[in-house]
Length: 159
Ligand code: HEC
Image (cartoon, rainbow, N blue to C red):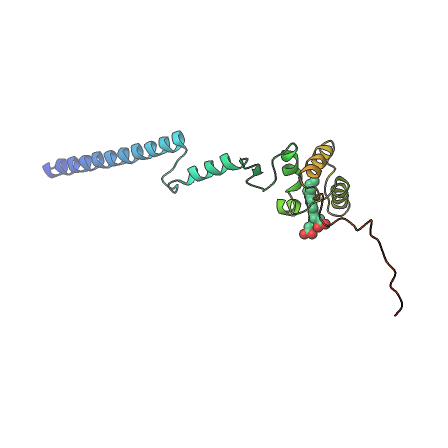
């Protein structure tokens, strides 16, 4: 073995040492990132503020402002949740809120949807839903002028 051999071995050992150090460093950084991701639910790939927005939406989804359910536009009242759960699956809530009907009218609409649009049987919720609709979306009492009565009709004279 020549003296240069020994020197070469030393160099190789040194190189191994540095490579191991770098590898250890990388492992530590990755472990740290993994720990952060697991403990906070955030990763460096997340857009800042992203999770916050979603939380805000979740909180506001059932918010009622001035007696109106913000997400759907339905009026606040007993049965609101049953109506939201059964009447917003196929069409927008606006299709419901823009209508005014008597209880019979609402029932007929529901039956029509059940017969032709695959609306399911509402079960015991039907009563609650009908009560809600007929009290919150009823025809206005005086939608048009009263019919004329007590009029003194007179006969036209022949000229
Ligand atoms: C299974 C699907 C489905 C569900 C659930 C549903 N509807 Fe409908 N509804 C329809 C379809 C389809 C139409 C017709 C839509 C159109 O004409 O664009 C409709 C139309 C309507 C209309 C308009 C009727 C008209 O004469 O123009 C009203 C009012 C209505 N639905 C109220 C309700 C109410 C109240 C509920 C909850 C009890 C409800 N819908 C649940 C499918 C559904």
